[in-house]
View 1 (cartoon, rainbow, N blue to C red):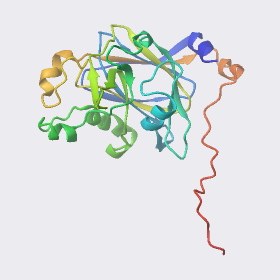
View 2 (view 1 turned 180 degrees about the vertical axis):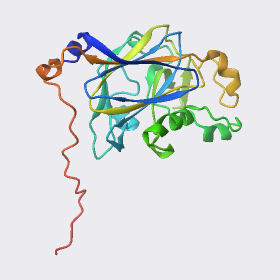
View 3 (view 1 turned 90 degrees about the horizontal axis):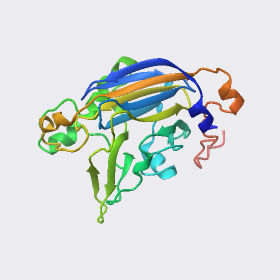
View 4 (view 1 turned 135 degrees about the horizontal axis):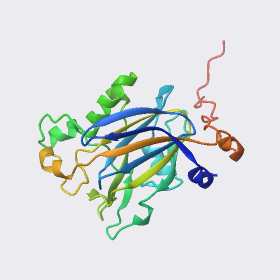
Amino acid sequence: MYEAIRRAARERVDDFTLAPRDGRAWAVAAGAVVRISTPEGPQVGDLNLWNRHNRHERFWASKTRQLQSSHLSRLDRLWSTAPFLRPLATVLADSLAWYGRDGNGARVHDLLGSRCDPYAGLLAGAGGYDFHCHSNLVRAVRPFGLAEHDVHDVVNLFQVTGLDDRGRYFMSPSPARAGDAVELLAEQDLLMALSTCPGGDLSAWALDSPAAMASTCRPLRVQVFRLADDGLLARLGWRPACVSAYAGRHGIVEPDA
């Protein structure tokens, strides 16, 4: 089914370029395809997702890591938080699937780490820098009525990470080339937000010195498509994901009336 969706004719409904060290949010209809690409070369992007009609249902990075993998690629699903626990999106295409596992044990499209943020930046001595991914996402979602507490752990697109022999997190420069892309199928109506990481391609990562990383920063492009054949999804048996069927009692026994 997903291969047929990936190959189907499309009509573009949105297309914008996100400047370096910035953030933007946009709405996506269920059944749409979202393509995020690196038009000028390697650049990490931090992605958040919510159910468009309920901000409490949002991307659950740790559960996705548990159900899918520590790093995402084609046909992996991005799962939402409990009590909903259903796919928000599915990866249709990944031009970096060739990367696999490198000699250091690292992979691309990271779920091990989180977004960079000004709080950790202060701990590292970076001062009051306002354009970390966390802050970029906060600004991006404000026009949609969301606030800082709605921003959550991300998918680090185009980012290479791993764990060393002592279990410590490490990052490597992004292998993305101009035109590399990830495509996602929206499994429900979504609000998506993306930050172009101030670390750029991570070839000069220095949390305590954002200015030193400026030369490694590039834009990201976002395109949203609908399928040209309005009836294709139904014929393929696709439908928006349903919430978990768990009754939600959690073993709680109500007292007799």
